[in-house]
Length: 474
Image: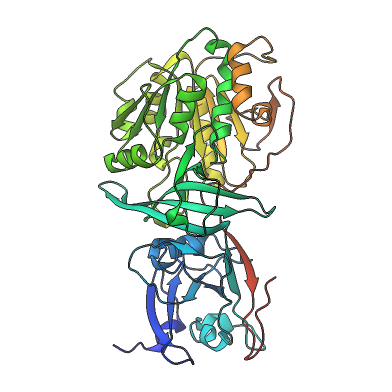
């Protein structure tokens, strides 16, 4: 069936069109995917951009699905919010994600400007005295190789994959990690753990390497701050040989394993998808006699228990693809849910939550709701411009403590960065000016995370040039 080019003259919220067309070279095809923003532009002008899909990664859910395309649109670095994002690349070689090696990808084809203009809405030309240029964004992350270990289908989360990846950071350091990603939000790394090859030699073929897990390192940038948050109740933790922790949201289980292995917690983990839990056991080493797993919705779980845990860790994110990445889900902010979370704690317990605010209003509401139910509220800014860690103490913990004589705090400082502990700030639930009162701690500096939250994505802009010109990356 032929495609009418006129359909691209206007934008339609959430419209998603994919097609292939021949290149000038014989026997070569180009795949194009065009997505319009789910939110109609409030202005009379629109903004359009394009991304050249990295060769070898065409089958990745990031580039081959509506949900991945949507996340790219919502996270684009353009000055104005995008009304349309165009993906161009080679046709996928497989209907499912495959392993890739992108150490030296070839550049995109030249002279894409006419095609990009033809795929742009008419509103793109309003107010221009000359033909506009559609920016060609270059997708960049630290991944240079990946190896797909398993693709599963869970009854709650849908399709997800386990992969080994080789990363190369800006300083030239290379690192291997094992990751868990969901198809419904493929740009979002749900869980990851550092791994190292069992043999000294590094093979070019990542599929052929055997790895062992490094459980002593938390690589998700917000997990160490979450663990650091336990410091606010350190005086109540002294003398407890095996305190109790509840983790709502398990994923690969890196947080559960760290609490059990390094801080001697007995941990209950709750996840609604049994297939995810079984994958965590197979691939992330989530096997410990002091870790107990429950297949259940976390909110329903806490409503059945009272006065059992010293800490409750909340690492739940929204499952609504259209709203973008946010955590915790909106339903967790309800008063009855937060009240149940408070009741599940022992009197000196603490609630610690990973927060990715969908808006300033959402975070303000969360802080206010928590402040009405808990005695004291604290915050850690993870420093990646995305995550905050909210810490809520059921009882007052006191001001001006230094913890020099605390056995638990000294142990905590051996396994997480003191910078995170020193950066804990008490916040006033009644206002959202982010003013903080010092809690007897030392450092006020904003922390810089080594990698971004769960989606390590960067963009750089490159303009389509006339025929024969090179692509210039800014």
